[in-house]
Length: 236
Ligand SMILES: C[S@@+](CC[C@H](N)C(=O)[O-])C[C@H]1O[C@@H](n2cnc3c(N)ncnc32)[C@H](O)[C@@H]1O
Image (tube, rainbow, N blue to C red):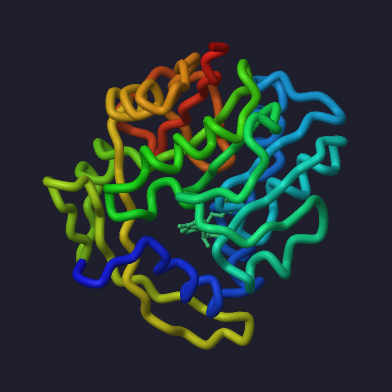
């Protein structure tokens, strides 16, 4: 991972563009937002931050329900596809946002959190905590280390030291042109997620086993690809 700078996905996004939205894992947006709307206690007018928003599928669904959404991403290509809310180009490790100005935040499907080589994920949670008002809530999805190692596919290499899974993935652009990219996905255990949250001043209120488009209050297990951490910014 020499030369790794935590921004590798920018090149993937530039190539994929709107074709990203053809991947099956993006089809569960409405179910995910229904679940989060209820779980995070959102209402029309709530100020919501989406960190690593990609082309803005959750930004648009939340804005459609009346939330005021700011979507942050490093990819200019993806941000140009965001049709609602307020897109902001920034690195999740350094958010140029007014402190304590959001009621809620989300970071889903490795939106910055989980794509940083296993080193800076705590930094991202710290930035998110700083953007939330005291008592504000956050939902972060993260790839499961249990699932990744149980279902290691040919060509994937899971680094036991950092918890980062490496693969070479073929990505298609809108015209169907294929290019191969290195993908580094950091994987987590529920205990790590709770510890990272606590270190960032966030009090975990829920931690569930989920899959894209199948968010539910399900106890952590070995069988689902992701965990969903829900936490609240400490009031003090
Ligand atoms: C797999 S996509 C997920 C996008 C969106 N959250 C979703 O659920 O479809 C990961 C996103 O994280 C963004 N990203 C990766 N590293 C980032 C960083 N360091 N800071 C901000 N965004 C980042 C990528 O550009 C990409 O849009």
